[in-house]
Each structure stands twice: as C-alpha cells, then as structure tokens.
Image (tube, rainbow, N blue to C red; front, side):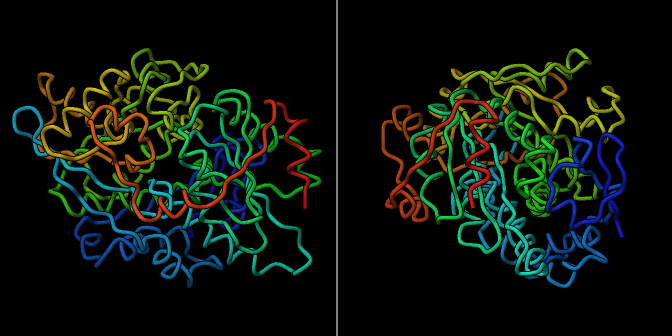
Length: 437
C-alpha cells in the first residue's frame, strides 16, 4: 500500500483523506511517498486507455475501499477517445503529432481527471451515514477546469460545486459552460485575475472557522485525485509512439506537465518534456534563474494558462528535493507570446488544415522553436492538445478566415441557459455562498 504525505512534512494520509480534502492540514499538497515502477512492455499490453489507467493507478488504490471499483472508475473516466493526429512536419522533418485530449463532455483535457475524481468521491461518500453533510467542492478556474468539474459532479449526490472564475478574463463560451449545470453547481465571477480566485480557495481551506461550518474539498490539480489519472493519458500517448518520444505540454498551474513527468517516472518511456507557457513566465524564469518568484498573472489569448503563481510548483520542487539542476535535467520550459500563438494558428491551418486552440498552438510553436535550436533532442514529438478550438472562436476564427463548428457536446451545452453570481475577491464575500445548503 502506498501512503501519502504533505509536501510540507505533515503526517501520512490514506487515499480517502487525500481524495476528500485535496490539501493537507499544514497547507501543503499531498504526494505519494513512492512511485510504482513499470516495464514499458507491461504497460503496452493494455488494450485501451481505461485498461492502461487501471494498471498504472492500481498501486495507489491497493488496500483502499476503492480498489475493487478502480476498473469501473477508469472505464467511466476514459470512455472518450484519445487519438493521435499528424501535424505538418517540424524543422528537419521531425514527426509531430497531437494527442487530442478534447473529446470529453466539455471538450478539454481536464474532463478525464475530473470524471475520475467525481467517480471516486461518489463511492467514498456513499459509505458515509445519510446524515453526513455534503462535501463542497471549491474550485478556481482559469478557463477549462471549472466546466470539467461542474460537468463531472453535476447531479451527483452528497456533493456541491462552487466554481470561481476571473470576471471578463475567459472566453464567452467558457463562461457559458460554467453556469449551465444542475442546482448543485454554482458559478461565481470574481473581480480580479485567476490568482485572486486561487488565493480565495487557499484562504477558505486555511480558515479553521469556515471549515468548522462546511466540509470543503478541491478538484483543482492541487487534488492528487485529479492529477494521477492525467498521467494515464500521457502514458497512453507514449504507448502509441516509439520509445523515447518527446512530449510538449502547455501548462498554467503545472498540473498537466507534472502528470506527464509522473508518467515518465513510472516507466512510460517518455523522452524529454518541454513545458510551454504564455507570457506568464514564472516556471521558465525559475529554471533560468534558479530561484522561484510568483507574480500577478498577465492576461493572454491562451487564458487557461494565465497563472502567475502555479500551485504545483510546490510538488515539482518537493519531488526533486529543491534541486533546480535536477529539475532542469528533467524538464524545460519556453514562453510563447500572443503574436507567436496567432502566427502558429495561421501556419498550421494553412499547412495541414488542422485548427489549434491558443494553448495547443503555444505547445506546437514551442516544439518548432526547440527543434530549430542546435543540438535539439532527436526523435518524435507529441504535443498535448488541451482544448477544442471552438471554445475560443473569437480568437481562432479571424485568424483562419472560417468558422469553427462546436462539437456536438459543446453545442448542446451552449443551448442551455446559463447564469452566475459575482463577488469581489474577498473571503467575506465568498463565505455566504459556501454556507448555503
């Protein structure tokens, strides 16, 4: 059985505690005390993504009340396709492919982890007495997390969802998708940036007075139950590519890139990992300078990556014992400007007919830039395609000169009515919404 421990040194916790609480009592993030190691050949025997996820995650669930349910949980979370799509060749003819992670209910990569966590918590909470208070899932979103979590938990018993998003800083369609769910989901626009939303979540979790009145849980990537299943789709992409294929992961809060690192550490045969960010350069600056400095976020076209102080930086530093030299050996990062994102969307559409969302375009452009450098890593490259471009039609359509039709699941969501509340970035303003039954 694998135990879990806070990045700040708190005592051990079991899987149930990790899934329900999200963060440790000392304010740290939970990490497994060890990672299982697999032979790539053993992982490659999996018939599909759900079977691979079950094999990869089974050691974390051994001995828990969810162990027997893990196959069903994985089938539920990974029911959506995970295709690899050819892009136009990179510099020197390098083979580039997209791992399409946008075929879930809200057309974003976060659907997989959110559905996994929701399925886990539904079973955990079903074991509690009927008189137990509901678990309130408090989520900060920079664009896609909130809709994925809302979709995954909508209509489920014993859970409420409160989603905080930065007012005016996400796309109109993203905003619509946040407010069109069942009555157990509440969406709130916060006057400020994503970092203000994230700070509100952290203040709520650290408030003993508030937590004495309401049960709080998290579904951001600070919750390990969201993060672990994300390693499975990176492993699936690696299993369908040559040994040592390099990955490019667009990242904001560092969760998806850290999940890719976990997949490599567990034996998926992934080569180099390149993180692409937008103008929010905290991750890249840390690798360049050797010290970490969070800052206020900057609004960009790739709004889901508008994070100035990524929460999962704490996990990354903890895993490598704070040794920045070791982190540089494991990961690289590059910042992509809005102008380069726009140019890449145009170029890829002209060359291959593929339409990229702004975040995926940042990843593709980062890959081209890295391949143009002397001594660039050889071999194939896979770029994590994080969202469907139809979610960002106001950015994409003027660049390619044509409309981007929403996939059926997004079209259905857009047909629903949508509403949200608004608050200032203050815990006192949020508290009444958290205390509602």
